[in-house]
Length: 165
Image (cartoon, rainbow, N blue to C red):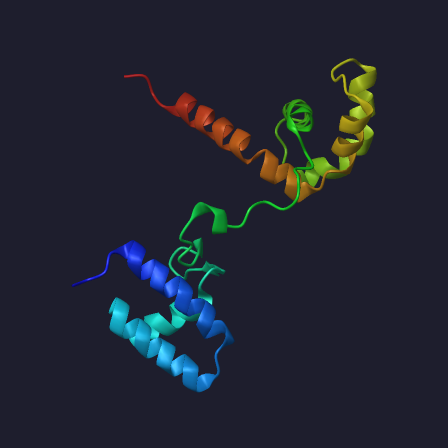
């Protein structure tokens, strides 16, 4: 009788814990056990036991997965709080549009100078915390935060290029 996927995962989870603490002879015995119980190929069984519960980048497409995480609680959670909240994002988006949608690498060096000018001309109204975060944001963070906005902008431009039928 074949095991269900949940049963295979439960067996693999328990044996992976033992495998991590075992010596070489015990590891071979555990691999044989996994092959006998779950019916996995030996190469796959060793990979599974070695990487169980870890983040692994798969070769096809570079997808990052957590190997055989049985429950949602075992997945890694974001350990640090977000630095740039919605207020910083909306101010950044406004400045980006005013600067004619330039890339983050060109925008970042000018933000400390440009934000006070925009405030002086009442284009932006910011609190002290948002102003300091906006002035110190890196180019990579700008590009990461504005990725969806840039994609939306490209889609709008493409829609305008289509001939009327």
